[in-house]
Image (cartoon, rainbow, N blue to C red; front, side):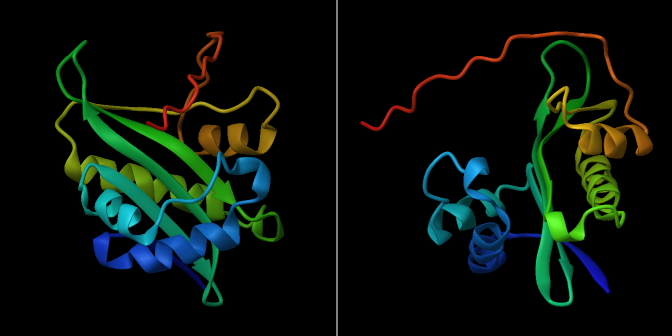
Length: 152
């Protein structure tokens, strides 16, 4: 049985354990956030982190946030991460997570709400999920930039 749950500050220890179990090394930019840091993140109502569990084990998650738009009325929900474990793919879990994220965003955001996400051009599975859940691909190309992490 699949359970989909939005996490809150009281779920920080569970979130840390779930992320540790789910995220492969190539998705990690360094150490995962501490339980204390996750509690602060999850206590911010504009941050949405939803976990999917199957047979009492995490099988996927979606995360993102809601922010006001300065270019128009309303808010923008940005879906940052969508991850489903390789053993759990092709079972509708990604679609269920996107639906849950959209539902949470609609409950919380100022209208009109726009929702945005992106994925690698070679990530056919993620593109299929987004399109099946009503997203349309925009023929834009962009160059991605990353700043080095400041540690002091």
